[in-house]
Structures are given as structure tokens and as C-alpha cells.
Image (cartoon, rainbow, N blue to C red; front, side):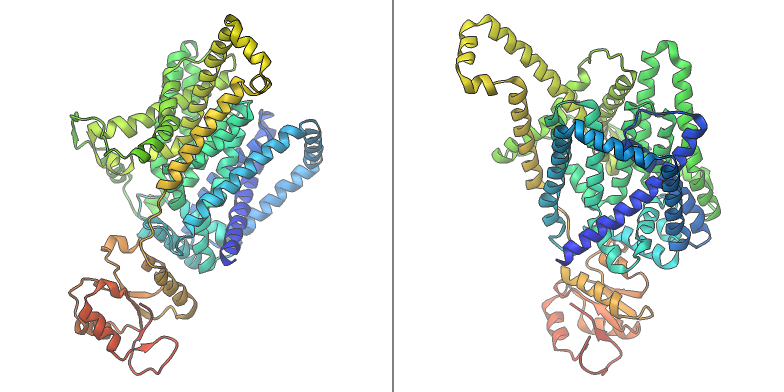
Length: 635
């Protein structure tokens, strides 16, 4: 019951802040459209998502400025967002937008009731399946998954307490955008437990919004409802995407911005809004903006080649995106100069060092063939067909020339994104050896997963069209087949290519989903008892206490990526976890550092140490007398 309460709280906090940012962006867009007198072919839902892009970039820039003055709090961030949202609502009310919206909803439900409830049912099933599939995995342990989540949670807690980002810990190479997003969300309830569970559970509301954006895109692209269903569940069936977003929300928000940007290609929204996506993704997660910029460069290269007579228009469009991106990133450059006293040339060289090529080799065996396992490989086949086979087929296929320029642009972009994905996953890391490929090369799959899914659907539609034509020819040429079909009521009713195609797609999806579910693993490296200790310390121990912490076998770098990182407000002393540590060395360490409490993992030490430890007369927390200057907190 407690977990459900934390989950609902996380949903409420995430959704409310998302709406506030969308309202901020909506207000800016409203003013922009009034000034330009422009109208875009967006649905209200799509307008909401485009508004979120503008809102989050505006919010991040303003938050950077506010943190310069150490005044990041509810009154400087959350309250102004609420006020601006109310102003936006008042403007819409005065323009009778709400009245029109209610009329539109009633008319839409009345004229499209069947389709409307089918779509609602599809989304509801997707949300329910998401919870049934992933909530047991997320809640398998109390702790966060290993790695970055502890580091990010520490930074958010620091921002909540001191109203400023931890500049020294964050460093210049990683912007603070994700910390500012989470910190702003949690200003409405900035306590340790809420923050901890927000960082653990916000995967779910994020994925819900991601699915709604996918739904909005697929409704524009495909008329058949089972293809919409396929797209939604294909997202839940990709093991890399799910595992990444489950553990690394910083990349997930950047993913969402890139996904929403696909709406710009399918509508007449000015393309310079892509500049907001570039700057927003950079401030949230720089690696993702690098991939996105590469996709934009490839896309505009294709446009220059195909639109020979409109080169100036294409160059102007790309230049506008570049200028808007720079405007959004000026604040990051100022922070580098004012806070870190950093030479941007040095930073530029440091950035380029990630791309420096160490060597170029042509491997003897380009693709690693793993050991054969019958069940594993059978399940892997449909998974590879859905996410790699069909997209490659779509990339190499020629689509019919469409009169719709926006649809053509969309096809160019997703094809380019697909090409980049396969280059970075299968080819470049094998040939070029650099730090960038060693660390970041698989992440391109997370960013451009929707593009691969849409390419798969286009391949399936082409495949279905070919089968339909063959079936019609066979049916008209072969009298026996036509008579058999007409006589058999079941065959006549259900033996239709669209129905058979949906069954085929469904089987592919079920097998892919099962493969993902079987192989999905979250790295929980610590015992729940350690998190119990962390919670107790936060609730009961004063911040001026000295606490000894077992290293848990971690190096100095990874201590900031462990549960100990959450105790940043305390004076921590780390004692070694080597097996050979003697008990007398341990007690000397405790006395020299005047440790009041300590967390220790006894399994890290030898039998002799454990016996001496358990036989020693410690004062246990919550009982006994203060016979000595320190107390044992937990084991």
C-alpha cells in the first residue's frame, strides 16, 4: 500500500510540473502566434507537447540564472510557474478557448464515438501492461538501480537544501538541466523520502507521456488501429530502451524532447523550433543532442540533394535552427565562464578529446556470433526482425512520391536516423576506436527507437500491400480457391489480408515482448537493509554527526554512485572493506575519527573480524547506555 501511495505521489508531482512547463510554453507560443498571425495544423494534444518543449527550455534558462544567486526555491520557481499558468488560463478563458474546447470534445465524441473509445482502450491497455510488466521489477528492491541514479538523487537533494546546484560535484562537462528539472518538480514536496521515490518511480509517468506522444504520431501516420497498438507495444518491447529509461531518467527527458520534435516534421510548425530541442537536449544530456544534431545534418544534406531548386530555403531553415540553439545555450557558456572561470577553448578541446580516434582497424570477423542457445535464439529472431530487419528493409526501399511535403520530410528524417543508428551500433565501433564509441555508441538506439518502429510499420504496410495483390490475383485466377472461399463462411469472413496481417504482427510483438521481459534485468547491487539505514539516518540523526561508512567495495569515484552519496549533509569517514582488515584497526579508525554511528557490511570481512565485532560491547542505536563515544548504527 505504501508503494502505491509513493507511485501516485510521483505521478501527481511529475504530471503537475509537466503541465506547468507546458503552460509556460503555451503562453509564449500564444504570444508568438498572435504576433505572427500564424496557425498550425496541430491538435490540442500536439500543441500541448510543442508547448512543453518551449516551456522546459525557457524554464532551464531561467533556472540557471536563479541558481547563480542561490535562490532556487518554491517562491522563485514554483510560484511564478503557477502564476504564469493562471495568466495563460485566464487568456484562454477570455478568448473562449475553453468553451470551444468543450464544444469540440462533445462533437468529436458524438461523431467519432467508436474510434474514440477504441483509442482510449488501446492507451489504457498500454498503461496497464506497463505497470504489470515493470512495477514488480522496479520494486524488487527498495534501493535505486546501481550507478547514476544515486548521483542524480544526491544532486537533487543538494539543490533542495541549499537552493543552488553543487557546482564542484557536477563539473563543467555535464549541464545541470536534469537536476533543475527534478529539483523544480519536487519543490512542492522537497523531503528526502518523496525525492528518493520520485527518482525511483518517475519512470512510469514519463513512459506514459512518451506513449501518448507515440500515439499522437501514429494517429497522423497510420489509419489502421492495430498499427497504433503495434507502435505502443513495440516501445514496451525494446529491452535497451526500457532498461535505460528505467534507470536513467536524465536521458529519458532528452528522449522525450527528440520524440516530440518528430511532430514538427509532420505539421507546419516552423522548423526553427528544432533549435529548442537541440538546446534542451544539450542542457539535459549532451550526448543525446550530439546524436540529434548529426541526424539534423544528415537530414538537411538529403534535403539539399533532393531540393536542388530550393537550396537557399534549406540553408536558411538550417541556419535558423542553429541560431535558436545558440540562444538557448548562451546560458551554459556564461555558467562556464562566471562559475567555473573556465576557458571555453579548453572546454572545446576537452569535448573533442572524446571524439579523438585512437586507431582504425578492419576486424577479421565483423559480427560476433554468440554461443547457440535454442530457446534464446528462437525468441531473439522476432525481436531482431521487428527492431532491425524491417527497418533496414524500409531504409533500402523507395516510398511512393507523396504530394505531402511534410510527410516526405518526415520520411527523410526517420530514414537518416535509421542509417545513423545502424552505423553507430554495428559498423563504426568495430572500425573506429575512441572514448566516445567505448562509452556512448549504443545510446543512439534509445534516441531513435521511434524512428525504427515507424520504419518497421512502413515495411509491414508494404509487405501487406504486396500480399494483398498476390492474393487477389490468385483468387481471380484460380476458380477452385474462389469457390472454396465463397462456400466456407469462416474463411470468407476471417481469411482477409488485414486480419491475417494483424495476427502476424501480434505474434511478432508478443514474442518480442516476451524476449524483453525474460532478459530485462535491473542492477540492484546493495541490500535493502542498507537503504533502511539511510532512511533512518535522514529521519533521526542530526546533520553534525560523524558517520563511518563501509566502502561497499567501491572505488572513490563510485562512492558518489552508491547509497552513501545520499548522506552528503553528514561528515562521512570511509573505512576499507578489504577482507584482511583487523578488528583492532577498525576500532582505532573509529576512535581517531570520532565516529558516532557507522554503517557496515559484515560480509565484506573475514570470520575473525565478524566474531570480534559481534562479541564487542557496542551500544546499539535505540537501546543501552552511552558507554563509549560511538554507536553502531546498522549491519
